[in-house]
Length: 636
Image (cartoon, rainbow, N blue to C red):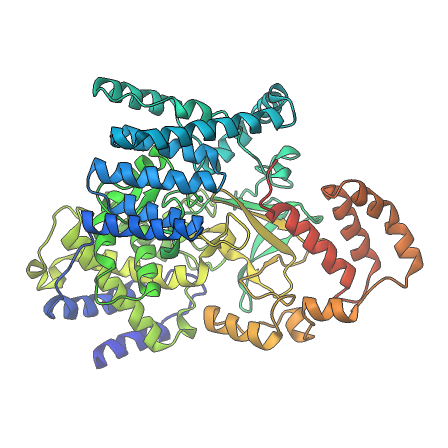
C-alpha cells in the first residue's frame, strides 16, 4: 500500500504539463505495481449473465403486469428484456408479440407492425396468430389514416424529402441519426427469402411500416447543419475558422474567437472519438448509435447489448462489441461493482479498443506515444504530424487534460485499480491480445509489456474521460450515454456560457448563444448554469467534478437564477419605450410564426447592442427561445 501511495505522489509531483502527455513512465509504474498485486491475489470467481428461459419468462410476465396496469412504456422495456434473455425462437416470438400489443396501444403503429412481423418470423404459434394479425390489420388502418391526413398530400411530402436529400453532405450526416428508425429494404427482402424457404411466410406488414415518412428537426429544413460558420479551421477541422486554439497558464488550452459570431452561428461540429451507452438506457436505446428505439433487437451472444437495426448490430460487433461482449456479461455480477465503476470500465475498455483498433495496433500506438511525449508545446500537444488537432486521432485524444495534480490520492488509486482489473478481464476473457491467458499465466507481470502498456493507457483514459466526456442528449432531458469529443474538450466552462450545444444523432453541434467578438474566449457549460442553479451549488458541483473554482462573470457577481429574474423582472427593458418599439416588428413576426428563428436572432442581436445591464429578463427569454428551437423534440 505504501509503495502505491509513493507512486501516486510521484505521478502528481512530476505532472508539469497541462495536457495528457508527459507521464507515461509514471503511469505504467503505478498501474504495473497494482496489476502485479492483483494477479497474485485470490481473484473472485466470475459469473457471466447468460440468456435463459427463466429470466425471459419472468421479464415477459413483468411486462404483462405493467400492460394490465396501463404502463405501456414500462411494459415495452420489460418485453425488450424478455427478448434480450430469450434463448429460443419461441421465447423471442412471444416477446415480440407481447411488445407489439403495448406499441399498438401507445399508437406506435409502425413499430407495432415491425414486431408483429418479427413474431411471425420467429414462428409465433398458429393458434395464437389470429389476435396478432387482427392487431396488424388495425395498425395498417391507422397508418393509412395518418398518410391520408399528412398534409393531405403524400406526393408533396416526397418532393420535400427529395429536395432535402439532394445535398449529399446533409444526407451523409443525418444517416447515423436515421439508423434508429430506418428499415433496410434489402435486409427485409433477404429475410423474406429465408422464411419462404423455411415455409414461414409472414404478412407484408413491413410494406406499410416503411411508408411512414421520416421526420426531421425544424432547423434541418432551413439550413445545412454540416457547415461551420467561416468554414473549418486548418488546425482543428471540427472548429470554425473564426476560432483559434490558444494556451495560457491560467486557462490551459482554450478557444479564442478571431471573427464575429452571431447568435445561432455554428462554432463547432464533431462526432465522438469514442462513446458508450449508460446502463439505465440498455433496454430503451441502441447500444451503437444511442438512439431511442421501441424495436430493439438483441446481441445473439449476450443479454446486455441491444440495437435499433441489423446494421447497427453488425457495425457494433465489427468495431467493438466482439471484444466487449464477454466482459459485459461479467460486470453485472463482478464484486458488486457499482454503476459508476461499471460505467468507467466500459468507457476505458471502449477507448482502448478504439486507440488500438481492436488490439491490432498496440505497437504502432507505443511508437506514436513516444513522438507525442517529445512535444513540449502545451498548445499543440496531440497535434498530428500534419499539424492538426484531429477528432479521430489517438494522439489527439490522449492529449486531453487529466487534472492529475488536483485529483485526490484515493481517486487516482481507484482509477489505477479499475484499469488493472480491466486489463485482466481483457487478457483472460477476450481475444484482444494475441493470446488468451489464464490468470496463473500472469504471475510475473513484468514479462507482459503489452498488458502493462494497455493498463497504463486505460488509466490515462480514466483521468481523461472523467474530465472531458460530454453527456449525449439526443432528446431533451434524456441522457443516453457519454462521448469523448476531442475538439469540444478544449472549451472552458462558464456558468454564463456564450455557446450552447445540441445533438443530431451522435454529432455534437455547438452554436453561439450570444454575440461573440474577436478576442473573446469561447465558453461552454460543463453542467451548472446560473439560470438553473444557485452559485454555491454550481461552484461545489464544478469543483467536485472538474476540480475547477469557477470565476466566471455569473459567479463573480452572483447572478440570480431564472426564477428570481422572472419574479423581480431583473434588468427588464419594459420601461425603455424606444427599445420596446424597436423590437415590435420582430415580436409581430413571432406572433405570426412562432418558428421564425431569424426574428429571435435579430432580437438577441439588438438587445446585446442596446442593453448594458446583465442579466436581463428579455435577453434570457430570447436565449431560451433560441435554445428550445434547436433542442425541441418536435420534428417536421
